[in-house]
Every structure is written in structure tokens, then in C-alpha cells.
Amino acid sequence: MKIGIVCYPTFGGSGVVATELGMALADKGHEVHFITYNQPVRLDFFSHRLHFHEVVLEEYPLFQYQPYELALSSKMVEVVAKYELEVLHVHYAIPHAYAAYMAKKMLEDKGIDVKVVTTLHGTDITLVGSHPTYKTAVEFSINKSDEVTAVSNSLKEDTLRLFNIEKDIKVVYNFIDGEKYDKAHEGECKREALAKPHERILTHISNFRPVKRTDDVIRIFNKVQKEIPSKLLMVGDGPERLKAENLAKELEIEDKVLFMGNSTEVAKILCYTDVFLLPSETESFGLAALEAMAASTPVVSTDTGGLPEVNINGVTGFLSELGDVDDMANNAIFLLKDEVVLNKFKENAKEHIKLFSLDNILPAYERLYKKCYVS
Ligand code: GMT
Image (tube, rainbow, N blue to C red; front, side, top):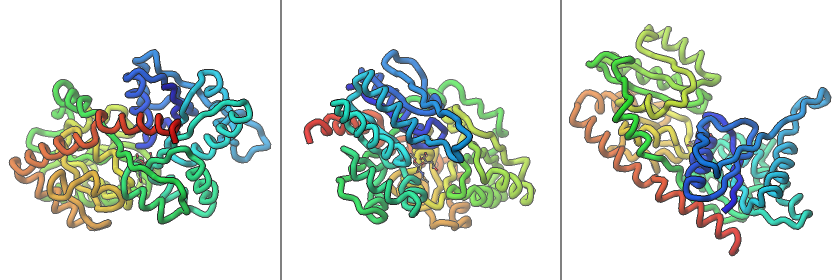
């Protein structure tokens, strides 16, 4: 099929999932067109079936805010008409689902029919979308999509609770290419560059927004390092980073905490890791946790949102109540102090990700694209 993919081209989970999906679809023979304001960070042009169309914004002094939706929907119309796209798959409802609906209507005027599939990723529903500022438009554009998916049962329930939804929402989990993580383990795992042989490595990866509770990460690690010689890798960047750095200094553990900034080498970083920490206030899914498990890393997380659908308590890691730093620290210590226990959880994590393999998830999206044309 000919598919347009619209996403945020950044390090966030929704952009990563959209990019990996587009690359996998192209690999399977579909023609894929990314329509975004920048080349997606994980986009790897290995296939001639992959195209990228930049949405360019015209600056004009009158605008206090640039009208991105207008530029995006105009670009969608242009690309759909020129390349005869059959489906626009938009990731993250705001403003992509709204812009796609406008593009669909403009194309109808030209006698062109394109179907819109909207994938809800999390904060577009739970934090931003349900805010009164956006709610009306988000609800409208979800209801006007030809098909709607959510990345977990938890997100589907949140959407039905927060909005008046008439469409059926299908749950299609995020996915992972396990092999990429196996390769990192085999060849390029230079653990000794970061920690001494007797030290354990804990990792946190996020966009350092308040919802990730990066201070809790530091506090959990502070307790762990008192019992287990260890290092903490803090990967990513965002508004809470400075606060987390200051807390590490205040707790006098700054020499044990490495702030690494944004990285496109997540697989290589995770292959060093013994335990992954994700104490988020909420996560619709927790792609970072799935990536950690793909690298055979158990996850110590909160039990919020979709995390219990990804991280199985007592099997792939542990779940704790939001803010229960002591419990999360104790769970990490339990995993790290016994090699046999740690290895068992590592094996379990690697086994569990099979549920989220590309082979399982890709056909679900392909079926959905086809279904748009029969329903
Ligand atoms: O985690 C973020 O703040 C980024 C956000 C995004 O849209 O990129 O992530 C959301 O979508 C990811 C991919 O589906 C999910 O794995 C994350 O759990 C979800 N984040 C939240 O719900 C906070």
C-alpha cells in the first residue's frame, strides 16, 4: 500500500514507534512517506520505498504562534495527491489527527479519497488532550478518524473515560525489534568504559519531563548505591534535568551518576544495564521499559497507566505504587544482590518481549489499513 506517516520527529516514544513502523512497512514492500517538520531521529534511509517530506513553516511577524496545522494539512494534501497515498497514519492526536481530517476534507473536494488512521500514544490524551483548551478539537478528530488505535488497554480506558468517543478504539501495542538489542549485546557492549567490574549499572531513559519523576530516580539510586556498588546512567534531556543533577550533588552521589543527554544509541547503552528504573507518574505504555527488556534488563517501575501490561510484577521486574521510592529501591536491591535472581529476571524480560514483536504487531496495522477500505 501507499502510506503516509505523520509524527513528532523527536526522541519521544510516539515518534520512535512511528519511525520504526514506517521503516518496517517499507521493508515489507509498502511505499512509505513521512510527513514531518524534521527528519525523524531514528529514520534510516535503507530503503528506496521510504520518503521524507518536510513541513516548512513560513515565519511572519503577525503570528505570535506559527500555524503549524495549516502547513501540515497543506503538505498532506500535496503529498497524498502527488503520490496517490491510500492511508494517512497519524501518531499522537494533537494536532496530527485534526490536520489529517482537514486534509481529508480538502482532498474530497478534489475527488480524492484518503483514509485516516489515528494512533493515540498517551499524553495526547492523559495530560494535554483532555485539557479544556484542546478537548473539543481532540474529541472531534478522534471521532472523525477512519480507524483509531491506542497503545495499551489502559490508554483506551483513559480515552473512553475522558472523551465522548463514538469510534471503536483498537488496542495495538507498541513493538520492538529484539534482534537489534541482541546485536548490541554481541558486539559493542563496552561496559568497562562506564563502571568497574564489581559495579552494577542502573539506567533511566526519558524526556525528563515532570511526569517521569526523575527526582525519584535519583532518590531510588541513592538508596541502592548505599548497599550495592553501582552507577546510574541518566539518558535523555528535558526540563527536569538540572533539578535531577542538583539533587545528585546535594546527595553527594554526583560521581556515581552520569548524565548522558539524548542518544540515538539506546540499544548500546542498555546492553550495559542491570536494572532499568521508570518511576513515572503515568505511562500509557512505557516504550523505554520495553526497550530495556529487549536488552534483557529487568524493570523497576511504578504500577501506573499501561506499565502493568508491559512490566509483569515479579517476572520481568517489579511494580510499586507511585512515589514509593523505598519499595522501588528495595526491589532494585533484591534484583542486584543475587546473580541467580538477576539472571532469571533478565531471561524472563527477554522472553516476555516476544509478545511485542514486530511479527505480531505489524500485521495488525496492515489489517487496519485494509479494513478502512471495507468498512
Ligand atoms: O513519554 C513521553 O512523554 C513521550 C510520549 C510521546 O508521545 O512520545 O510517550 C508516550 O507515547 C509512548 C509511545 O507510545 C509511550 O510508550 C509512553 O508511555 C507515552 N508517555 C506517557 O504516557 C507519559
